[in-house]
Image 1: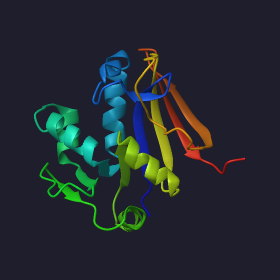
Image 2: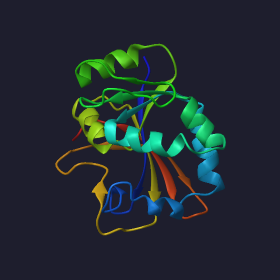
Image 3: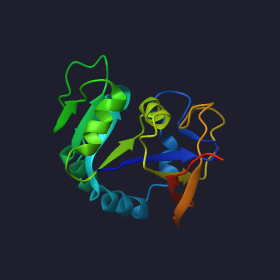
Length: 184
C-alpha cells in the first residue's frame, strides 16, 4: 500500500503561510541549492500529489507557467484534488477525488504506484490527520517567526510524532522527518 507523506515548509511559530493566502515570502529564507536538490530527490518518490482545492488552484496557476527541473516535475506528476466545489481539474495530469474523503483516500492508497504526497493543503491535511491517514511528516523549518499567519496544524489537533531524521541546511533551515505515533 502506498503511504501518504505530508511535506510543508513552516516557520518557527508554526505557520505555513503568512497572514494573507499565498503569502509565502518566508520560503526565500530557506530556499537554495540544498533544498532544490532535496525537492528533486524527494520528487522521485512521488507517484501522486494530493491537494485541497485552494492549494491545487494556486499550484496550478504558478507551476503551469514556470520552467525548469522542479516545474517539469510538478507539471508531470499525477495530481488528485479533494474538493466538493471544483468541477474540473485541468492542470496537466489532474483528476478529482471521487467519493467521501476518508474512503476515497484509502482507495487512492491502494492504487499501485509510488507514494502520495500532500503539499500545503492545511484543511485537507487536518482531515487526513483526524482519520489517521498520514504515514509520514516532512517539514522544512524556516528560521523565521511571522507573528501571524495560517498554522499548519490546526488548534486542538493532538499529534505525537517520532523524529527519524534531521538535515540542517546552509540557509539555517532544517528538514525534519517524523513518523506518527500513538499519543501518550
